[in-house]
Amino acid sequence: MQHTASASTYFFTTATVVSGCLFLLTSAPTYADNTPIPLLSTWESNMTTFGRQICNKLIPGAEDLAAQGGDVYYDGERVYYQIAAYTGDPTWKYCAGLAEVIYRDGYVFPNNGRAAGYDNFTQGLLLDYQQTRDTVSQNALVLLSQNASFASDGTPLEWSADASVSREVAYAIMAYLNAEAVGQPRRARLSDMIDQALGHIDQWFISKTAPYVRPFMVGITMQALIQAYDATHDSRIPNAVKTALDGLWPSMWLPDCQCFKYTNVDTSSGDMSPAPDLNLIVAPAYGWMYYMTGDTQYRDRGDQIFAGGVANAQTWLYLGKQFDQNYWWSPAYVAWRKAAQPGVPAAGPLPTTTSTGSVPSGNTVSTTPTAPSPSPSPSTPSQVLTTTTAPTTPSSAQPAEQTTGSRFLGKLKQLMDHVR
Image (cartoon, rainbow, N blue to C red; front, side):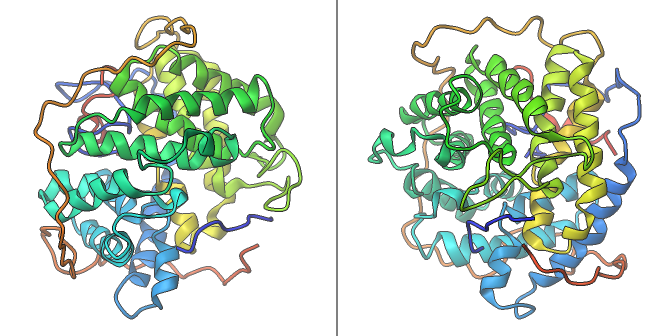
């Protein structure tokens, strides 16, 4: 499998979260769709077994700093906070704190937030701030939203118009919205970035002018747009996500491996080989569309994507990056999938796509902006923990080493409390 690494180195689980999943619930939900999610128990077991293995690698001195940077790529802090919420075990916050020290203190602050555009991860910092009120994480998040590549206001828009930089645009969208959640005003540039993300979907599936299509990159864009939909109610977004989902399935899905191709054409940075380890970056969007429309086609396809990822990516999960990719957004699939009602749209018919006008700005954040701290001095995990040690349940044996070739989203935690 040729996956060319592009970096060295959400689904949110708290009550005020943005893009993770669901609608406002005032009591424990009764799930409308009680059909079993295939391999859910295996997904849960892998989450804790491999999660402990990766957590142990994050302990200071367990690996060199470069390797630890790779182990938290794809927002290890977010992943561990989500595991803590899903399992109800607060000791996973210890692992979130280890990931935080590596990414926030070892990368974000030394670079004053000038992270590479593909390494602009803000959800874990948001979760930390929401749970601990640690202003150091708040400041780090704001710095990333202002200074990361492609996120700064002075970056020419033409630099990110092409779909080859879709990840950078998606992460900028999420960074802007996450900065709002910690008190920053809405960025004027947000509407431009949403327009560009919608343009990337056009390049992939309508005009077909993109140099290549990579399903995991499409998945990242869909995650950002779903978060933006919750914030702006932009009526173009649901149909754009539907266009992407309907375009991926016939052109990129490989039934024999129950996975997507890595790329639709051979390129110097990746080929057409199967990529089951990336399934779970795509599956949640099918769950969202099932929840939004009640159309069981999206449930059935989502189940195949989810099960194929769980079954066929296990030999990769001992690697920190691949583990994070698999648990970065996949809890959202479980939540949306269980909350959906077959045949009944959660929000009525999908909004009619508007003409190419300006994106509605939505409601502005009324809280007072907080400026980044000029002189952070972080050195230890910020989490207020109920324990000072990592999760203690024994891990399974590590596999042999391999060569690495809202209106509708609302208070997610209330739902997540009941998806276990």
